[in-house]
Amino acid sequence: RAYGAMGAGGMWVRTAHTALSGVLTLGLFLHRTAERGAVLQPTLFVALLGCSVLLYFKVSLMDPGFVRAEEEKSEEQRTMIPQVSSSVKMRRCGYCMVKQPMRAKHCQLCQHCVRRYDHHCPWIENCVGEKNHPLFIVYLSVQLIVLLWGGHVAWSGLYFKQSWEWLWHNIFLLVSFLLIVVFTIVVLLLLISHLYLISCNTTTWEFMSYHRISYLRHSELENPFDQGVIRNLWRFFCSCHLTAWEKIYFHRNNETV
Image 1 (cartoon, one colour):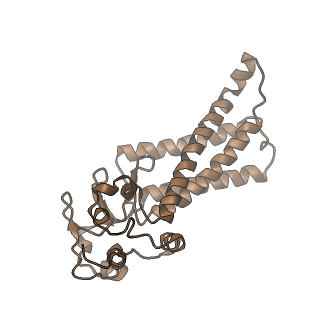
Image 2: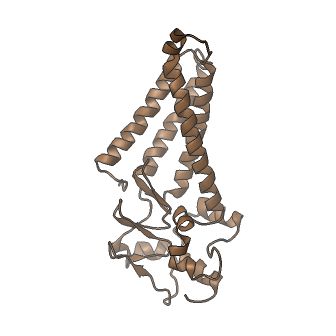
Image 3: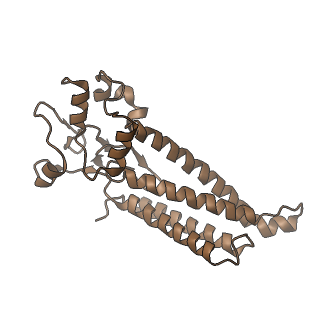
């Protein structure tokens, strides 16, 4: 089942992403570049691009960690999420009226509460949360490799000459290169910032709204979820189940807030 936003906006964004990827790739290999004439390198590039597009659709359409009302007493929740002390009071969302686990937030665009909410990404038209955040990082990494490779291909075909005829015949390649440079900078900065936050076991929402989040404001620790870089990365990339953040929070603070 696809949990991403399936409205007209989401359809247009995903169509634009796929079309832009296809047009840029076709344009690069129709021009005289270093890759043209070879067989293996263009094939690998197209395969990597295809992997990037598939990851994009997977991340944008999958459940990011929606908190559903029927999970409150379901067996699925009890087996996936370790039980916490009965003294832990779960908040109830004022919008969808579900009990919010710690670090969850209601997204008004998706109209759901999302576990370990990071942000709502307009480019994938879906939230980035506990379930799809690791795959989102993989997607950004693959996308960065595609952009760097595409930038190299575009640059190899640019032999600058001071003439209108040269500009007319190379305008698409030049525009493609400039677009790739812009996208590369954006993806690189996004990937670096996310990896830094992951290494600290914090989210974009928590980082930006620290003083407005009650469980962070009242904590004795600057970041009650930080367990060291290695454990943070291991839990993020290698954990196969949802985390009871309440357990970590109360264990590290050693008191009930």
